[in-house]
Figure 1 (cartoon, rainbow, N blue to C red):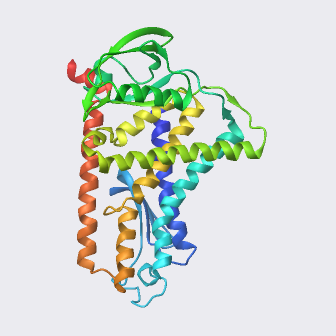
Figure 2 (tube, rainbow, N blue to C red; figure 1 turned 30 degrees about the vertical axis):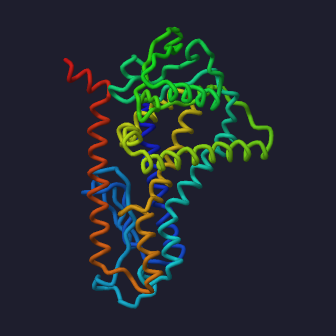
Figure 3 (cartoon, rainbow, N blue to C red; figure 1 turned 60 degrees about the horizontal axis):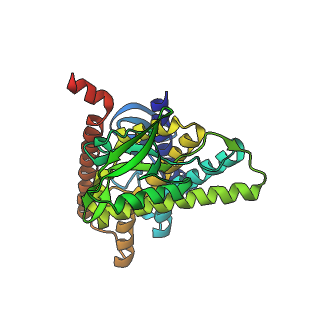
Amino acid sequence: MNVLLSISILGLLIFFHEGGHFLAATIQGIKVNGFSIGFGPALIKQKFRGVTYSLRAFPLGGFVSFPDEKESDISLNDPDLMSNRSITQRAFVLSAGVLANLLIAWLILVGQATFIGIPNQPDPGVVIISTQQAEAADKSGLIPGDKILSINGTKLGTGQEAVKSLVTQIQSSPLKKIQFERVRENETQVISVIPSNAKGIGKIGAQLQQNLPRQLTKASNLGQIIKHSDSQFIDILFKTVKGYKGLITDFNSTSKQLSGPIKIIEIGAQLSEQGSSGLILFAALISINLAVLNSLPLPLLDGGQLVLLLLEGFRGKPIPERFQIAFMQSGFFLLVGLSILLIIRDTSQLKIFQQFINN
């Protein structure tokens, strides 16, 4: 059930992203001829009012397509063609998916605070969300769901301060044995972990999160709802941007933390086990990640298309079509290839797969 919830949330957030592009185009009167969730062969296809809606085989994203002057029934000078609209109007369409994901993430957090409640103060300790195979955390026996209450006999405290304290002590202890007080299914045990050395910084290969309580408190007023939601939204957005920045500044270390669809779904299932707070955190986190990822100036992503649009504005005329095609095709093979590699890697790390190959 948790896995199905994670898949449903991921698909819904992709739908909202593409829906942002679709809505931004239609409210401006720009012609749209396709709305697709996924890539590759169409599994389900239905045409309605000139737009072909489809669900495709590879759920790695989606796209909204626009007719062009090459189609026999389209006039070269049709003002409702995307290519004939101003740069400002096209930029709005291209950026609307990112804006939709950011808005949805904020509304999710507001919805939680309004209708479900605001989390109480976090419980003591830090929760292990995921571990990387053959890294220090994995070698020491840590698994997703474990709670770390202290390090070297010192209590970690609660909330983000607990996470920061644990990260700081791990980073300052490369190749040094440290002691974790671990809680798993109400059983407490002290285990040893030896962080690896990454350019003088200790790393254990684990994703950490504050220990969120299951209990929620009803918000007392609108101001409390907005304040809490804004704080959560900004915190998640800041950490997401910082994570992608790390891919540029320290790719060798940060690339190991990249997650494909399989790992994302697994993390969602783990977070949902913490109750509604964990599931809502997963939805907001993925929505913001989709927004930041699509903002990157890479081929095929919204940010890459905005770069082409910006170049067109500087040149005063469209970028040559052959260059646009080459740019987009390179992005397609890059992203699909990366996605396949991540799927293979993440699948090989699943417990059920490990049990299968070890039998």
